[in-house]
Image (cartoon, rainbow, N blue to C red; front, side):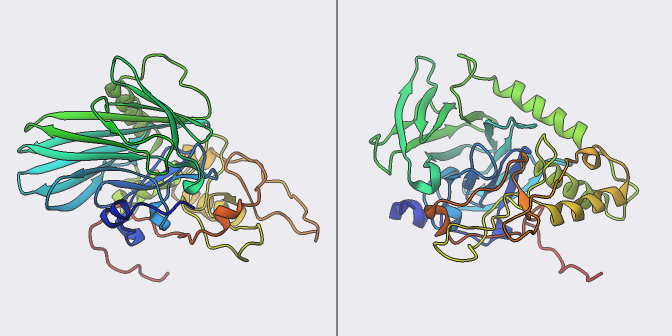
Length: 355
């Protein structure tokens, strides 16, 4: 794992897991910190190597942060995993609406970020520092076209970034190769950023129109999360349903969590990462959904057949797309990961009542 630069590590240190918001599109998930830093994202799939890994002390992040002093906050839009980061600054209020375009494609992600000077002017710094495979493969072959759209390679992935036409680029080929963009927005002004990462080059020469992608994502969430008004806590139930839907791939596999786990035995080439569809966890989630009512998510199930191991026991989990789990690379096996604990917002909550 590449050691992050001191400035990056000091500006965006790891936070308690409950301080992060969760973005997901069914095929992968990202964690957004209180300073607007996306510090965890595996791409292109749940079980792929991390592109942003400062969550666990690694390198690579994508940050949208107001300049100067600010007080952070944020909330989800009802029944979705569309998050609104919100900061009260010395000049006013700044928001950043963010989401993974939903529903996601297995080999390609689209990450949407819309900066909005809600009250007063806004000065915002954007840092894009992608490093695949937990910081071992850096940015290369970066080019900016006449429309200000950046394309590049990072590891085996193809990158396209729209909205960063005025960004500066550090020395390509080094571990610190990253984009820096300073935005100055007047009151009421918005600025869209669209990051695409995929196994193949972008299909279209013209990037997607941000407003169209936002509209499709909004409609998809609205159609995917049913009203649960007959439950004890309709808002919380709907948000929990959205989290489960965001963690369920098109093939029906539901990952246990977006983040890693500690390896059972260091350097043994084995891991028990939660970024897989564990049979036990999927059964529990299915029972919880079915207890409420028949829903589209309850119908998203996939066949789980026994895979005997050398000792005759069934395999404990599979990839979200039904593929067999693979042993971790040594770089991943050495990372100290986090497991569960995602919460729907950052407001204080009472401890859960035992049942």
